[in-house]
Amino acid sequence: YRLGSGKVIPLDVRVTAATNKDPETLITEGKFREDLYYRLNIARIHLPPLRERKEDIQRFVAYGIEKLNRKYGRKVQGLSDEAMLSLMRYDWPGNVRELLNLLEATFINLPQKEIAFADLQRLFQQKLKETESVPHHERRDILSALLETKWNKAEAARKLHWSRMTLY
Image (tube, rainbow, N blue to C red; front, side, top):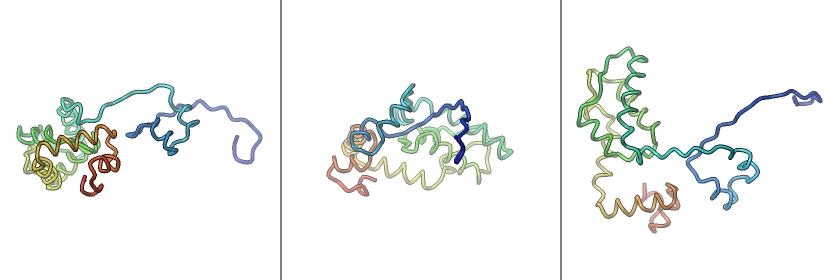
């Protein structure tokens, strides 16, 4: 019905929804409506985060470079081995969107035909360095807490008895 109208207008609509949270947990916590969940939960597709399928990074990079070459009229051919290895070592908390944004930020000022590690954003280089400087056992504990809490940072921080900012 249109607002204020009594006439029915037929619609054929499909809704696609995505979340990085567990809806069932949110329902039990009272943070998600159960009736809405049952309306949306018809066909479910689980797509693992990029950190769990690093073999896909090369394909996403190739796709991103092809798309950005068209957008910016460039002829970048790819990444140096060092740059690609750095992308493979990173955990990608922002998933594919973070990877493609990094490529675009690099593309904006890129003078070369190949993206080297030095061409990648300083912020990314810094994040990678900080991640690698964390002791291995501490890194394992952090990843374990994050996986157990489905990457809920506040929950993981509580599990580790840290503040959320320390976890970041």
